[in-house]
Each structure stands twice: as C-alpha cells, then as structure tokens.
Image 1 (cartoon, rainbow, N blue to C red):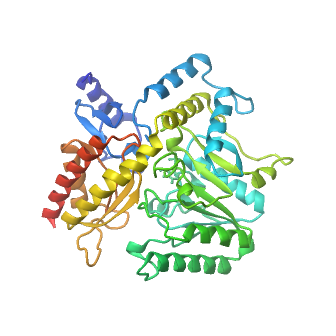
Image 2: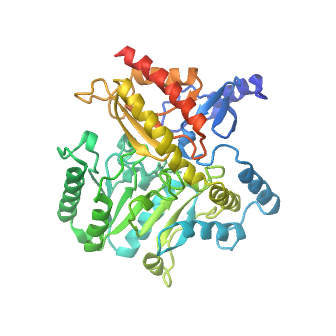
Image 3: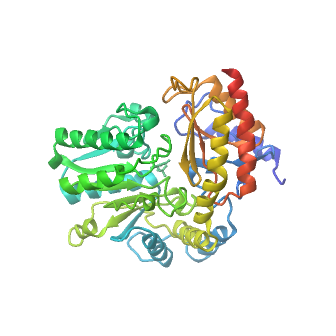
Length: 445
Ligand code: PLP
C-alpha cells in the first residue's frame, strides 16, 4: 500500500494533542488512524487493510471513494465551491429533484441541512409552526442527532446528560419483541400493544398539544428493530385522527440501506415530513435534509420560514448527492443491497446464530442487520449493560480488527452494516471473520 507510517504517527500525535472527539472521555481515547479507503475496505495507519462492516457511521452506502462521486466533487470544486443559500444553483436544484423523485407522492420540496441532527431540528420546527402545537412524541431506543433538540428527541443513553432543555419532548416505548415492554409473545401482539400504548400517551398528554410523532422508520443505532405488521400504518392512522404530523427519520435507514431507496417503501407509509442525511451522498461532503409534505410547505407560502443555514444546499455536497444517486441508480446499488441481504447476509447470519450460543437473535434486511449478543439465551441477559460495554464486547471488537474487519457495535449488539455495494465475496469474507470472533466470545462465557 502507499500508506506512510511516519505520516500516520504524526497524524495520531497531533490528534491526541489537539482534536477533541465526540461522545468519549478524551483521556483514554485511542483513535485508529485511517489513511485511505476504497470500496468496502480501508487502510489503517500502518497500512493494514480492514473490511469496513461499519460503513463508518453507517453512511458510506456507495462504498469508499466511488470514482463517479469523487469526480463530481472535483468538477464542482473547479466550477463553484460555495454559494449563499438564497441563490439558486444547478447542483442544489438537481439534487432536490432526484431526492423528491424517490420520495412518496406529496412530499415535493426539500430543505437542505448539513446533516441528520439539524434535519430533525428543522422538521420539528416546521411541525410545531404548522400545527401550532408544542409537543413531540418519540421512542426510547432511538437516535436523532447530537444538537440540543435532536438529542432530546433521542431515546438512547446519549440523551441522559443532555436533558437540560427538553421541554415538549415525550418518549414512548416502540415495538421491540425480543425485549418486549408489553409482555408480548408475537409480532402481532407487540404491534397492537405498542399502538394501544401510544394511543394512551397521546390521550394523557393531550392530543391538541402534540405537533408530531417522530420515528426512525427502522430504529438504527438503537438496534435495527423492524416495525412489526401494522405498526407504521397504525401510527399513521392515529396521527391523522388527532391532527398530529408523522415525521419519519430516514437518516440511517434511507438511501439503499434496507434494500429500498427509503425504508418506508417496505411498509407503504406516507409521512408528513421525512428527514435524510448519510447515504444521500454517502457522507463524502456533509449533507442532510427535510422532505416536506405539500400541505406543510404551503404553511410557508406567504409566511416566512424562520430558519436557515449558511450552507443549506452546499454545491459540493449537492454535486456529490447528484452523482451518488445517479450512480446508485445506474449500477443497481439498491437492488444489490436487497439481494445480498436476502441471499448472503440473512442466511449467513442465521447460520452463525445456530452455531454460536452468544447470539440471541438476528434481525434486519438489506445491509442493515443486528445481532443481539447475550450471556444466556434463556434470560436474554445482554452481553453488555444498556448503554455500557463489557470485556466480552471489547474482545469481540479486538478479534474482528485483528482478523481484518472493522465492526459496528452498540452496547451488547453487533451490527452488520457494510456498504450497499458489498459483493457476495466480501460479505462472505466478513461472515467468516465474525464466525471466528463469535467463537472467541462463546469461549469466554
Ligand atoms: N438520525 C438517525 C437515525 C441517525 O442514525 C443519525 C446519526 O447517526 C442522526 C439522525 C444524526 O445525524 P448527524 O450525525 O448527521 O447529525
């Protein structure tokens, strides 16, 4: 490889001296240097190759360094690097057209942001202004971003230290059969009881005070829980009945991850607002946005929308989105994600679950899978406490990396989230490494 270990050592030392990292205690943090990447692989500071089964933060849906996207960014950079948000620009206009074309009927406009958190911030702002109501209902076991409103909307432990300005956010339990909050034994029961719970919370909070229900179509970092039959349709109906907007967060689940352009396509639910980021341009340049239902957009036909960003619809980010979406369509990338999930990852992970007692459940679709790792299949005690870590989870990550795979873990779960472009051979290579790593963990229990 052309990785220079001396340059990598310097990058590491300067990082430790001057870079302040997200979510971690700074002292013990030992970041891996990533020197370069291509397709499904990256190279660390010593030039060791790793199969990227994390897609970084589940965002490189088109793989690393896709030549058409790199070229589009280079061409746009040569033409026009930046433009103020009030002007029109070809890259932004075309990106908006391509996103709207893939969204459900009736969501005809896009407000571009810098990422997922601010997309959710703006969706909530729009919902509150459109309805004139203050509250938003979200689920525990969710992640919606790290800015103030977005972290309050979030249901995972990262919210705990940040609940200092959470006025108006109410959390409910979403459906999750494996750890059912509703004592359910079937997906149908889980769905019906989660809907009944939501109905009760809406009644108790006061329907006329609730602007929106905001959900990840498929909760991602919190565990990749597929919505059970009837759940999303039930939430949609409940929202209609009470004049509440439905906001779907497709930041992680969108743009091919589930083997569809948007995860909502699997269930046919039509939200009033839909947020996206990550896969829209695979994160090559920061970009997110809100798809706005025509009735919500009409609220701001005469009345100014009170919000904006210097980089809303940034030309480099939008040029990257145009190239990403076009290449994904031309190259059948979404179809590939669906097929690899159905033919390789799904069956392969089910087979790992059969052989490794530490695997309590496998669930997912496309290139979006979670393995629930447990100390005991009977009690379902997680391999790490909620929001925490453990020696076994640490060992799992270490063994994966030793054998050449970069995994994605959260609490006691292993997520299998390679790029949507992953080949059968790469998926099988990854499954082989996971097989070895799970065997090490089995032996620790
Ligand atoms: N929503 C979901 C579902 C996410 O997974 C994330 C990021 O992981 C976000 C929102 C926040 O996006 P960003 O980190 O781009 O602000």
